[in-house]
Length: 89
Image (tube, rainbow, N blue to C red; front, side, top):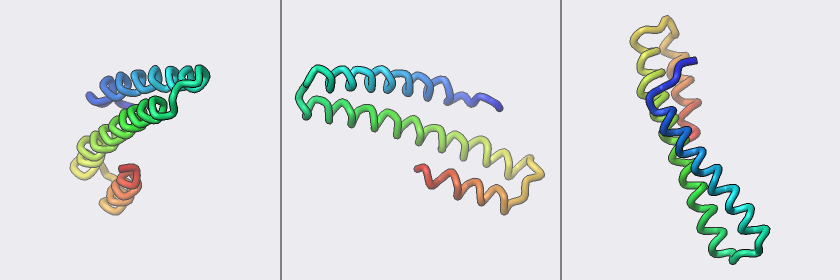
């Protein structure tokens, strides 16, 4: 499996979200205000969503584009893969 140029940035975003998620658990355990917790949950959700979107776009831009150009994979298979991955957008 190859690593794409976007993967290090995605890993960085997800590790940051992981740290925020741990702090949210602490906030809940400490009885912090729901508004503060909801705000932090929104930030984590947004970070994960952006990481996912970057990954999907990178896959479309590089893997599927290369499959169309260079691979013996049929056009039907490439279209099926495109449809499958875009459901995550």
